[in-house]
Image 1 (cartoon, rainbow, N blue to C red):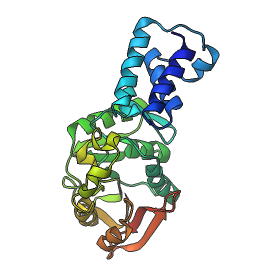
Image 2: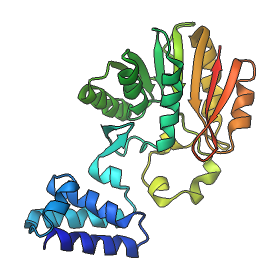
Image 3: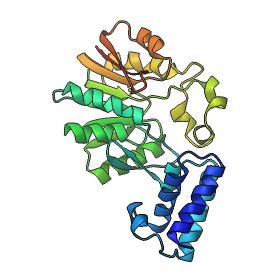
Length: 273
């Protein structure tokens, strides 16, 4: 079995099962099986696969055909130009979350205490630490998520302190300058309509925000008001159709702004204590 044939057969299987981007997925899975970058395939299409490589590739294809996301198979993902480790204990990062990073970076914030609440794999905390060249404090309710996030910080050389905690409970009043968060915001009523890759594989704790999706915001925004210093900034990612409801929760904050993603959907809410 050559690389060319393996990719052709893998792509055909994935396309037959309506898996998005079948050729790209086949290349990623084969690269994971034989421990090489995708560019290698174009220079060595006739290379014969070893039996162990073919067995691994077949197993990865079977997992993907059964709904397991590619990122959970390879245990890695790309975000903001960096590679992060991943497990089923954390959400797969979405491209729209990069807008949250860009919003904070454009502020060019002065030195101070920056917190990432509900850090998951640590993508926000690690990225902001590296982009701004400053320490970050991050929390998550999940011990497993904190462990993954800590590994990513060490691997990428980011100065981040991780705490296993529920939102902002451990922190004193008026102790932070900037708080960022991408909290769970999917309404429970949307569970049955989610893609199987999301519904069956990603952690419910990090996905669902109560019946309407705003349960975490209802706790986070008042807690952020307590923990932020006067003039401190809160920046949070919001879900589709939630801009009005979340804005109302922050109605008594100053300078409230909404930033849309590339599809024009309000995606980041920024406000000042």
